[in-house]
Image (cartoon, rainbow, N blue to C red; front, side, top):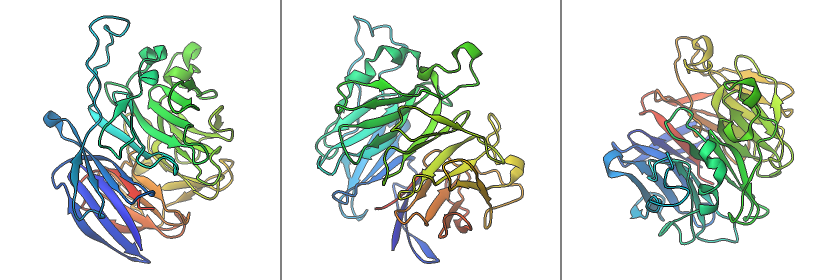
Length: 365
C-alpha cells in the first residue's frame, strides 16, 4: 500500500492507496499551513513544518505514523550582529518559512537538514531536538548578491544529500544558483555553470550567483544525474551538478516549478508546465504533464485524466512526486486538485478536487 503525505494551507492529509483504491485516512493540524514534509526512511519518523504567521514557524514530529505528534525545536537564526561585516545585512535574520527538509545519510542517524527563507541552511544531529545554522553558507560573501524570486527574500528550497557520501550536499537557492559542499558544510562552491537568467541584462545573464532555480532533484540510482526546473527553462546535469546543460523547451512550455526524477532511470523526468511567467496558469487552460525518457532530447505531453478546459491549476515546486517504483506519481495544485498516476504519467486519476491549496506532497518510502 502507498502512503502519501499532502501538506496544504489547511493542514496535513494522510492518504492511503492500493491499485485504483485511494482514500484520505486522516487529517492533522486542521487550519494550519503546512509548508514542508519529510518521512525519514531511516527510522520511520514523520516531520511536518508549519508556517504560523505571527506565531512563527513550527515543527512537529511523529514516530507512530501520525497517531500522535510532538512539537520539536524549529530552526532559528542567531541575533543579527550589530557590528562587523554583516551588521548592514538587508536580509532579516528571522526564519519565515521552512522550505526544505532532508534526511542525512544512512550512516548519520538523527541527522536532518532544513532549508529556509530567508536562505539559511540548518542542521540537526538529534532528530530535530536542536538546530544549528550553517554559518559557512550564511556568511558566504556571495550571499549578498542573492535575491527573492516570487518572495521578497531568497530561500533554500532544495537540499539533496548524496546517498554515496553524506558529506556531499547540493542545495538550490531562489534566486542564488546551486551550491555544493563536500565536507559536510564546512566550505561551499557555487556550481550553476551553464544556466542563464534571461530576465537579467545580457552581460549578467550567465552569472551563476543570480540563477532562479525553482526546484532541483536527483536520481537515486545514479546521483550524478540531476534535473532542474529553472525560471527560464529546464536544465540537466550528468556530472554531479558541476555543469548544467539547457534542455530545449518542450511544448507547451519550458516554464514551471515542479520536477520529479525517476529514482531508477536517470534519463526520465516529469514536469508540470505553466504559462510564463507572471500569469502562472496552464497554457491555454489545459493541464498537462510532460515527460522525457531520453535525457531531455524529446518530450511526451501527457493529459489523459487531467482537466483540459478552463483549468487554472498551478503545481508548486514540491507538489509533484514519484514513488520508488518509477511508475506511481502524485501531483497536486494550488486550487486543491490531487491526481495520481499508476503508469508513469500516461494517465491520471483524480483523488480530490476539494483540498485546500497544496504546497507539498511526499510518498512515504
